[in-house]
Image (cartoon, rainbow, N blue to C red; front, top):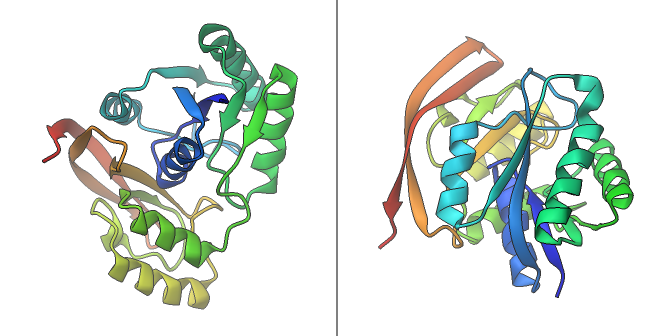
Length: 228
């Protein structure tokens, strides 16, 4: 049985990849997160650290992180983190939620090869409409916490994404041309509940609107609630 770490951002893609890996018999030993301490990383999302801790607790999985201050060290940071996790947990695989970014896929493949582990990307190359429907169909509940693209409504920030929202975004993506799965950085998401979560996350925060095309939902308080 393969043993793996999941490259975890707390968003829909990494949570979906985690579920896909476990359903295929992969034993997930840990979550690993790179945390850029600057905006607009070419390779990584900028996750909310407290949000990651809450999700790791909800999943009952250890979380291994590394902070990153130098954009030129993005792949080296991943190498350092995966080398540490391989020694600590004996993993032989990295699971990633990459969907469309060739740049991401090549970078993760190269680092995984250097560390001596396999890369598994269950979301890679999927049809975007079908993929978003599969996420919702698996009862993965997420909210948008950032929007940086023309055409994505700011009223989606900070609330659970629904089937109705998906139908609306499909129409808007055809009109404005943004990536429906947000793979190009058009938006970032935060998962508050999923089948593997032992607790549901209750979050509160505030919207910050920068411009017509940019807005954020700042997570201010996160608590765990037992699932009925």
